[in-house]
Image (cartoon, rainbow over all chains, first blue to last red; front, side, top):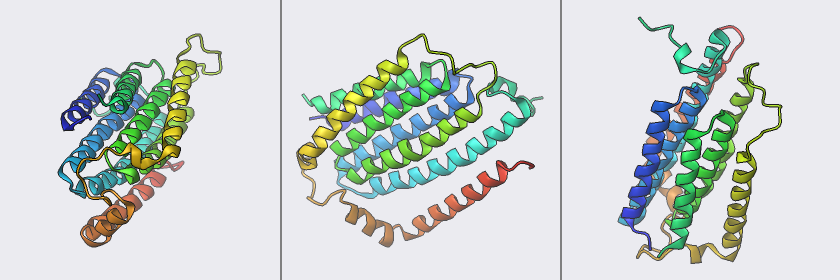
Length: 100
Length: 165
């Protein structure tokens, strides 16, 4: 039976993958998906600890994270569409309007 | 050994690697979908059936569809997605995902109780009615704040995506 350690290691690996993807890719959509990957690893960690400690607050918190993630994706993708209208690209290196 | 955990953990990690290494955004989205399905299966293992269902319906059903829609909107003219793909990544990953979906359905039909490992938890742990009670008693303020947050996000998204900002 997989214990809390296994779930913690899996969540760490997924979070690390998300960080690597966020730092190495230049496609903005893939950056978004890396952020989703990190959020999901945290969800897994919360649910695993919720089951281990027999406290259902972790599951409630995961549902709040779902709401925040939905809001984040809606606003983020709208911003991305706006940026695309101006720059005609999804490459983050092209978004340098605020650089000095 | 816990084969259920191992199968879906390997599936999640492999699909995560595929997500961050895929060349285009669309195969990357397919990899992310696989991660979501694998995590939903692991949530079932952890006495969280409601979270598993919401994982499928909100993440795979709503958020990822939104991302795929935006990918479709943002295809630049130099990326020709209409040409037939040389690599077999779509087909292979789709086949793996379909096979896992069949496994998941068979397991679900055989009974969710057998899936949940006994961890010394109360019988109704993670039951939707328990979570609903928590939502409407202990976390009622947070619940209302989440709904306001979603409303603000909705208005902001409509305002940002308008023709003239």
